[in-house]
Length: 382
Image 1 (cartoon, rainbow, N blue to C red):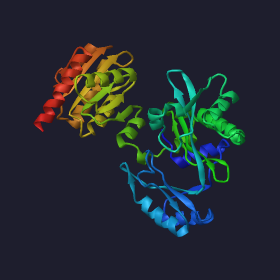
Image 2 (spheres, rainbow, N blue to C red):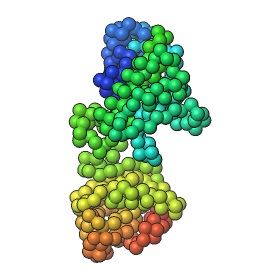
Image 3 (cartoon, rainbow, N blue to C red):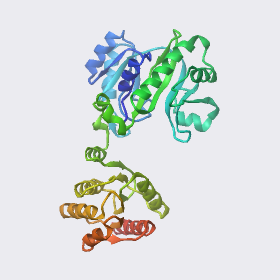
Image 4 (spheres, rainbow, N blue to C red):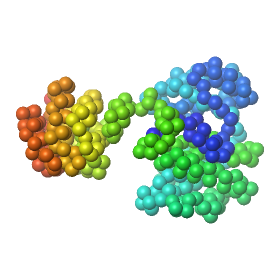
């Protein structure tokens, strides 16, 4: 779950990370009033859950109230990467002398959180990593000990931060760690953390991504979810306990188990196809859940064939088959469907599907090949 900048900065502020004064506006008139409260010179920042807002013109500097209202009207009418701007953050403008990247994420290879700092702030950290990796300083955090002062000192020295800022940098680092850990985040990022023209450290931007699996522990954060910016099918899947991510391919996938789903997508690509989605129905999926998953897949008009790859352990093959048949009765899809069904009650499931005009396969390789061939035929016919 991604948080908007203003939401991330609200969490930062609770953990003693200094941020510029500002408020959210939903109209040009409201932006003008906030600009007046902040002294006139403000930054108008679009609140959309995508990167590249600045390059798209979604971040603008206003010199006074009147200009703030004018720019707010322009930004609120924008679409950035297909997402409409419905809210803007009006922050007090500050003079910037130095920009620093500062963030925490999980290093899966090291199996530890890692705090990252770079003197090349203000631009994509991925670009810095690719072009000038020596500018990225990392400090792995022992999850049992937590963030230590020596971790912070290593980062401060690595980015050549002036010594006069070490105390506040220490405060910000500990605040960011507490925000990251306390929110069950997978990313907490300040880009940029700036040294202002009056020699203060300030987090002028913020980004947090929260682990969906931990949201039950954070009802206050769950309430921040902006479903208007999320894919409709992904939101629908979430309501029914399904893990669905839309992709750009033509072969719909319904699989039980995240690892098996990844393997299924890989083998589809191996045989020349492109997966249209990641969809994990999970263990113990019943007929209702399977039917809902199929409906969600079929909402994607790009899907030209569907591959079911079900390994029955907790999930029963006959329940999966009943769910498929239930959905077929309601939707009556015209695209070909390939099923590989093995494990618990697989024979019963295959018997139920025998008259459903589905293509069957014994191995995953065979199933993937048949799904790719079927989608190719549909595309050629169209």
